[in-house]
Every structure is written in C-alpha cells, then in structure tokens.
Length: 82
Image (cartoon, rainbow, N blue to C red; front, side, top):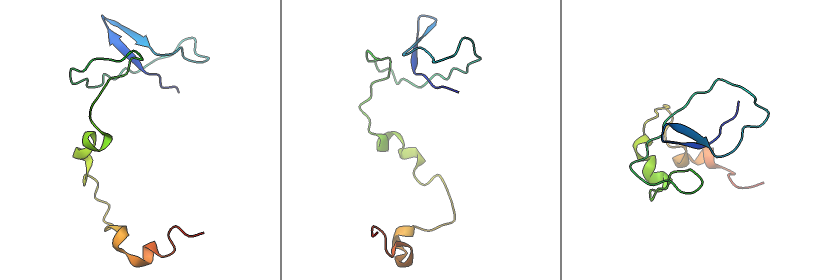
C-alpha cells in the first residue's frame, strides 16, 4: 500500500508523484477539508494554523483510566538517565 498526495481540480486528480511499481490498483480517495485556502505549488494545502490549534478538539477525547503520569514520582524515577 502506498500513500501519495494530490489535488482534485476540474474533475481530475493530479498526483504529486508517480506510484512506484504499480500498473493498476483500486484506490480510495479522501477529500480533505480546505477551509477555502489556496493550494501551494506542491499541491498541498496552505495553513496558518499550528498543529496544536488544528488538534485542539482532540485534547481530552481519549479516556484511558490512567491519571497524568507526570505527577507520579515513581513513574518518573530515573527518567532521562542512562
């Protein structure tokens, strides 16, 4: 399986590179949200958001049942030492 970036424009998908060693294959196309921003010359979307801003809605979304391990002194014992 390979992943290749591309851009959908005027009814066609333009890939940023040629797939290696693939003559024919089934594909799944996922349209990413563009927020109305222009594409750069490599076909990727430009953004002024940081990763932390883009992923802010994910903070606290996973409940593992484990508390904050950084507050557990035994867990951090020896951390960063060889």
